[in-house]
Length: 357
Ligand code: 0WD
Ligand code: CA
Image (cartoon, rainbow, N blue to C red):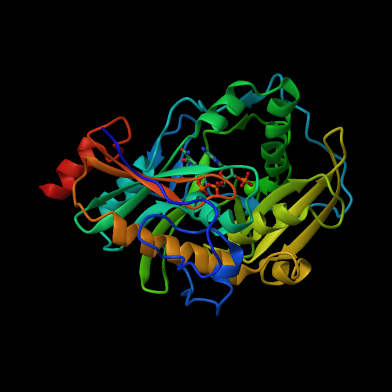
């Protein structure tokens, strides 16, 4: 039977954010000096091909081809006839990262996807979507893997045709702006296959937490004299709002790129009909100034840091079959429950066996 540790929802201002039962998500508790966040270092990479097969190399890395400032990219093109969509019912959990770890054997405190850390960074500002993060301690390392919430599964299964098509638009923008190699040009007539991806693996430290995480990278600067990764990487986005996107969207953009040290985001501003009419580059270092009064990077980083301390303090049993399930709902504290050999266990046998060998 799961062991539920609930905490009070309406926390009081004097509450210690690291109390024994839950973790407060109130912003004002995290307004202190920016924590130490070491310059992220790329320690490796991997690629996933058109059939989602893993390769321990950069074969899927693409090159940024700077478009016209006012292009007329039709993002709807090819949705019906040149689109191969990744199977969203297949939950890969941390499997690709674990495969990478087996051939490199780094020792760290935490292993996770960059996307999971992005969700942690934005939690104090999140008013709409909750999350579930499964944590397992194995040989001292804490592995963090997301579990789809009921709400998110329902939303995925009840997606409108319009929403499904709009999800394609982001990938189509990548196809208009990325080339397969330094000397080639983008091929907007090709097939968009969302199985394909290039992921960087970075190591860094947040306060006393040594982190290893992987994140998907859209493309890199094609100048061979560009700085080494991750400084040469470019994140691509599309947005409806011309000139500056919505505030909350900007926090997410900042958090996602700041974590792995990606310095610039290229935004394609589109109309309601999926046509990109303007392209603009945003340096990640300037993003926080764009919205200074609304959100603070220090709150994001301090919350993430305290969450990781909370996890270290809570997930004490070192056992690949034990999952500590951390749960967040907007305007509530983070709480957790413990599950032994349950549906939540996520470290695969091939990984556990190889590490234990
Ligand atoms: O199983 C899961 N719940 C997840 C799996 C959640 C998040 C990621 N993944 C895996 C996939 O294997 C994917 O290849 O992570 C990879 C991407 O990881 P990430 O970089 O940590 O994820 P995130 O920062 O959330 O997203 C980066 C990009 C997205 O671009 P935009 O511009 O929309 O942020 O990765 C893509 C998407 O293009 N992406 C995904 N690709 C495959 N599976 C997924 C996903 N679940 N989520 C986002
Ligand atoms: Ca992107």
